[in-house]
Length: 432
Image 1 (tube, rainbow, N blue to C red):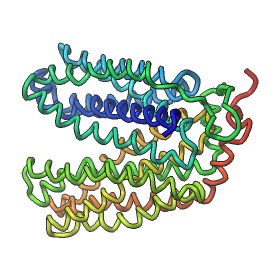
Image 2: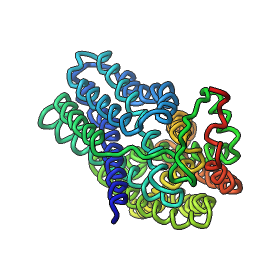
Image 3: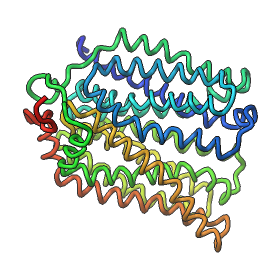
């Protein structure tokens, strides 16, 4: 491997580590919810706001400005500062004297973490050409997946030995050291160097409204973002209600459920690595092949996901769910590789932030609620078995996403090529 190849590999590896730490710090509150609630004496409503609403609120207000900032300044430095900030905020949670103190600290965690995805995807866009971004993005997605699973285990062990405050402190502090490692060992890629021609040496000057209008003029953007929203509604709704499904319908204990659920979800990490490499090979034929891949995968897994909730046998249900996660786990990676290449080099971070905003607020924010509303309606006649039928919303939403991806595939090749045309990066702005 050449020196530049080693440098790129190191950069992507560190970006994966940063994504892992972000997932650990983001998820630790859910793992420590019960001991924190007992210690601080707060209600379920308050804890629900702390674990869900706080993050959504911050992303709704900070993600887009962070994306615009990442398009204008040194992204490596932004990631290092953001990592140090959310690590300090996580560690500061250990000193919380009450709910308000903890809430403010968690808002700080969310605000700092909002900088990580757009800056990361913008850097990857300048490290690799469009046909090689899937594999690199999969490293970051897998890092995040490992962060969720490993972080949950580590936080639980630390809580058992040192309490929730000790767990918060121990999880937060290592991020400061990694931030220094990022700052002094990761090079800042030159913007636009992978998109034909020279570097994108003119920074975007458009207002937020102008950049939103620029995104609206990308024909692929509308169906792609709607497909992403539908996909995230399906994913987050299923993740939120699958544990209850296993316990209510198949009568598993919490211990049995967590073991099986962890096994099923773990398949997504392997799927991401395979999907990233495979979609890169397909993308050599054109960007539309990434979306063909997504639609084909959805056509395969939607029936399996539907069957998982309808079959009577637990073993058959788990087999269907394993097939679902092992095959569909890479959809997020491939979708991300698609929209990263749709944006001009000087707008990649903003487009990433906009996509994350839509998928989090409109996808993850609405999905679990829709499942719950449907389940409440069906449970009046079906009781505990209602989840068998409300869970069918997941495959229905996936099918909708697959259709929208096929619509987007009709224009994605032309829009991807247009993103790197000379002058396109500054089209959103008038004179300085």
